[in-house]
Amino acid sequence: MGLGKERAHSMVRLATSEKKGIPVSLYSDKSMAPFDPLLLVWSAATRITNEDNVIRADLALSRGEKKLWGVLKQVK
Image (cartoon, rainbow, N blue to C red; front, side, top):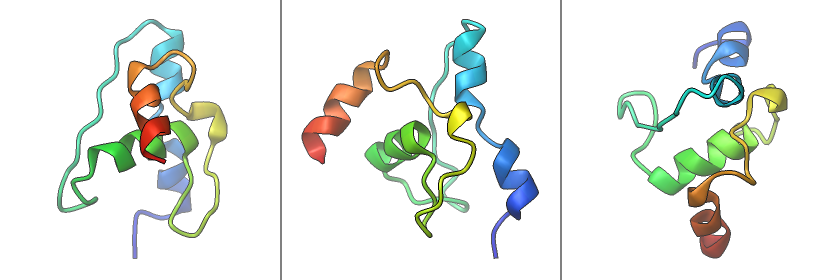
């Protein structure tokens, strides 16, 4: 089940957008992922899968530059 490794490795390239100065936002397509905003931010920042694998860490959302990261650290 899922999208497959090849497709998963190329999804949600937030670091690429950040480097080009393109604002990013996160959302949930409820049929694909649960609606949990903090989980989405954590996933974008770590790119850790349900199986504890990291997929393309180079595409992760920058932790140091995101205001939401401070909120996430308080929750953990």
